[in-house]
Length: 377
Image (cartoon, helix red, strand yellow):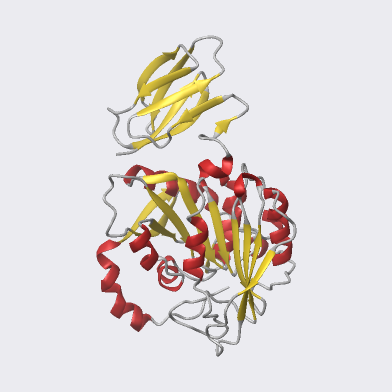
């Protein structure tokens, strides 16, 4: 699902505007060097935690192209969130996200890569771990849905633009909490058909699935939006499924006559709707949610062990809450396997001081049960 060709001459002229705040970096995951492009707004100081938006490119595209095509940077400059644009790997010679469907046969662990990327960014930047969101174009939208199913403990909401769910994602989805869902899709999309295909669920099926998961009203409120550009060949209806658990909604911008494009993008292209700006609508949706209010608890709980660890990430202390019966030994282990702290849990509410540890990934070992801890600056 390649996005429209980008006008790289324009990109070259505009790049200087953002270059001082744009960082291209890599991490190694599963023995593969994985690249990402980070955008940090000028307002970021590191003094307080900020939201993170993961913005995934389409099939055959790149992180840099998505940064320009599905552009959140002007919004980031005012709202103050950091944007990560991950780069997909090659599959049969084409960049992709391994989501099942037409990518069956790929061995890339993109969920694991995303998890590792979030770990790295949480160490290096002051990220609000309750406000991490996923969005993307086409294959990137499919990837966002995959994360909502397989990495939901770290994702507060997702917004898919021209993407859907593969049957593999749809049939094996196990979200850990209610999930706010925004879907933007054109009815004339010739690449990811609105009515579905053998490798892609229909948009109606996807919406109804999440309406059920979130326990929303099955009848949406439908609003016809103003036709601001009568020459773009499309109009927009906004569907809102309200009343979900924890005040979660499922929403859909149905672009009637719209094609396989990002509405409101600055490069245009056949089938592009100009009545809405997809980036603006996605951020407005994201900004209403965080992991605290959609899980209905202050922390995510390891239910089977009845242990709560918070805050995580932390720059100082962690608190361990558990149903205490007998004292238990614990260790804090570095990412290199070295034990850096030892102690004994003697109550059902115990603090551990991590302030002297350098920012990094650590593991809390409570008698053979391991929990990942992120120590930040």
